[in-house]
Length: 243
Length: 260
Image (cartoon, rainbow over all chains, first blue to last red):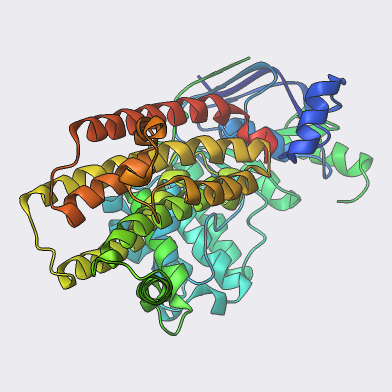
């Protein structure tokens, strides 16, 4: 059974970008000029079965993040169908909603609530979160005093306690030192073994080969190739400029 | 163009709200040497200035003019602050909204509730002045929670509408600021119900901020029950604004992501 299914999905944005000043807004309305649109995804189709994991590969600006935000339910497609079943946790950026003036533990609760943990669950998980982050001695300090690595460790620790059916990971593993990265990697492997579906954006070939069953190569918003990750990676590294 | 499946955020609304309100409060006061005292000091300074004006420049016949003025200033200050910060609430949380499907309605509501913490302090000052002026507690005080609650619903509705519009048109916040300045003169802060010409008197009741001020003066200053019609109109306008704000928000939120 497919837990994620895209059928001919396109997602376009207005080129002039997001929020406008009133002056610009009125001008556009009055002139009825054709708005310039930029399509981040064009006619993308794929499916991911339960318990599978898929890597999305592509250069910057190929539409990877847009694809993830569609799966996460943050954006709606302009065309096509997006079907997702199950609880999605998106590690699109760690530390969503972290505030520098709040202490580590205050941020843990704030972040956990935003990610969808109940009050009870957050309390139960708190010790395990602090333990995983490995920064117990600083937990009552404001996080503006933390190093960026420490902030990321704390954020990752909260995020993996969400217990999703589908886990979306956007290049967030490039945090912390080698030991912490390994810890994160182990935890993700554990989730995979537990039958969770993974959607993975990474430029680290080793990780992709090790974790993923499928690869999807995006180029300029279109699917360039799909197949076993090793083949896709090879084709990609032979083709694309680095990055 | 369809989306299907259980993708709804299924977290704990109350937990998020309480965390957002707490964050608001802590962030605002943690880095101040005087902390929460600012919230008390601010209205006291205003009162000092007003006391000077109304005893030295325009001497008032009544000694409890401070209560009269505070009944106007406290609701107005709360309203202006809550509406203004509520309007910017979504824009301030773009980083969260871009990454998590947490219900967007929570941001304006949390900001308004965050302002209620300060409101409590200000109401405390208002009560202190009321009792200090020798105006005792009467049974009509039971109306107070109700009229304040209506006011909070009214601001929530307005803030939902304007915060959503602010995502599309970024200078909405400045429009709100200007409207607040205008409103200052159009609600009875420095004048009473009796000073309003007859032909406007009815209209004023339909503005929940003005209605609240008039109701507070009835209760605290005159010691009588707020007029039945006044309460009716306050209730009607507040609930109508809340529903309208909610509908506008629901209509606009689908496009938030593309406009952030």
